[in-house]
Amino acid sequence: MRILIVNGYGKSETGKQQFERYCGQIRKLFLNQKELLDTETEFFSRDANDLDEFLYDQDSGYSKQEAANQFNFIDFVFIEIDAKLRPWSKHLKKVMVLIRMCLRTNKVLLATAGAMQALVFFVATNLETPVDVVNGPQGGPLGDMSKLQKSLDQITKNEYFLDSITGDLYGIYFDKIESANCWIPIANCGIHSRRAVEEFNTVGKYMLQAPVYKPQKIKEIYGLYTSTQDEEICLIKKNFVQHYLFKDIMQEFLVHSKHAWDIHSFNVLNPKKTFVILADSSKGPQVITVNENIVGLQFDINPKYPETQLILRNFIIHYLIQIRSCINMPQTIQQANNDLRKNKLDLENMTKQQAESQQKGERTAFNFEVLTKFKHVGFTGKKAKKLEIVMNNAINDQGQLQEAMKTMRQKQSPRTKQSTEETDLEKSKFAKFSTKLNHEHRDTTEKFNKTAAEIRQMLHPNIDEQLLPENEPLWVPGTMNTSMLASSGQRIRQRPQSTTQSRTFKLTRVQTAKSRVSKGTNKEDYDLCREHPIVRCSSPYITNVERDRLDQKQKDKQIIGPRSIRTSVISTIKGGTPFILYDNPYSNPADFKHRDENKSKWVGGQNFRVC
Image (tube, rainbow, N blue to C red; front, side):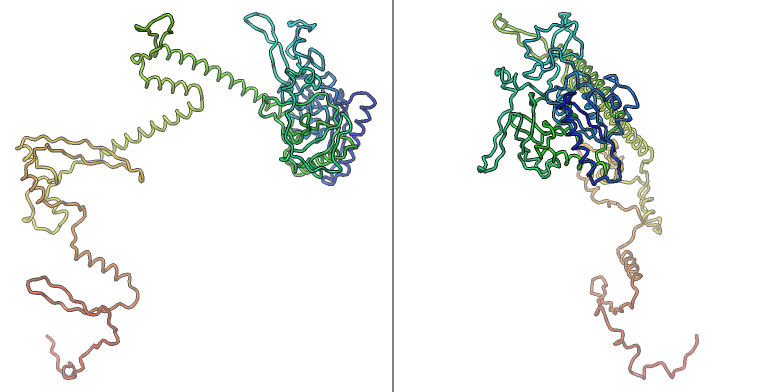
């Protein structure tokens, strides 16, 4: 396991003592940890100007592949910067590059004191290049722009003017109309000077943190009180009381902070770079989390304030457990740079497409407006009144306008264009398939030309020919014969065949052509239609008795056990049809007598003769 500890205090003796104390606390916690006992820990303590072996950022001029590999092998990064230094300070250029690399790769990072303001600066500005402030490291009011010694032509793209009251950064922009450089607001750095806000109360009052309501507590004997100006009471938000950083810590605790600049609210430019405030004070946020593996503390780790040491211990133990279980592992710097280039290309392509679509939309809208409207005054034209715009409906129809707008929308988005092409292709396939089915049905359907005698022979194969009717075409109920129609002089209006598709079985059926007769039908023709039988069976005719007999045979075949015997007597009714009277439907076979009890009627003892 490799741990990198960065010193941001400078070369002063007090700074060296604070950094040695900070390093000693981190080493003690790592050597006493029990989560990863079998791993060897290696510590790298570097100053702010001695980080070349870990930096790999081509935009800043660091392009050694060995440095990228060294950075990928690091597991923990701890950075503590002096509260008097600002993120744009020249002494912290390499430290800012290291923090930017940690944000890209989601490396495990704990930024304390001034390093937290560097995190907020990156989130607020979303700048990937180093920043140089023209009006000094502490900035100044906006009125000092005219007092700059540098001319506008000498200022480069990476140089900005800082407004210390609002935290706004102003950059150079070339105005084509006036053909000269001018200042424009670029971004907000997310921090402001506390003294400047108090002096310029007109604008600075909007930068101060609004007071938050706190419920009144019962007065306790031992409460938290600040004894110096550098102390602050840090309050954990209710939503994060059970956060892993605040284990074994009360909701309110004292911290030591020497900051002269405070964090204020701002608009986030990049949704992928945001932070969550876990604890704050009367002056602003004190504990934040960026992404999943980066934590920022506005105060320094000091043994006089034991809660700060507990936060450091909870941070180390939590991420040791995550490394052991391989959760939220960081990316390599090479993968992060490739993803960044890809996102930039996607953003450029998207902006180009939006600009082109907007131009096309403006052109089409202008054309429609010219074609569909014209200025008309009529007889009410006066100098005091403006011209009335009247719609001209005779030039273009509303349907044509809607179709033109649809085509314009399809051209704007390639996804919708692809989807419309797929739907059109499916519609064309379905149309071809339906036409093919129609042609097949037209080819397979044949005209029905059988006569009545042929149909009767098909239904009754054993019928005598004398009983067959004459060879006349089949008469369809509801229509008249062709001879009768010819005699009456009426015309047949036939309905063309139409195919209907079943939704459930997805089959097409052809409706037979129906013929219509004019309203002048005779009563004799109607009676003739009622006398003819209607044939609706295509199989040989079977009587009801034969059908019952076949059903009974099928039922008898299914019986396995002993069958019941039923006796019956045939009786007739005068002038009626014979019918069967059934006795008891079930009789016991043991009670049945197989021979007559009178022995004189027996056959035994008689002589038989063979015929």
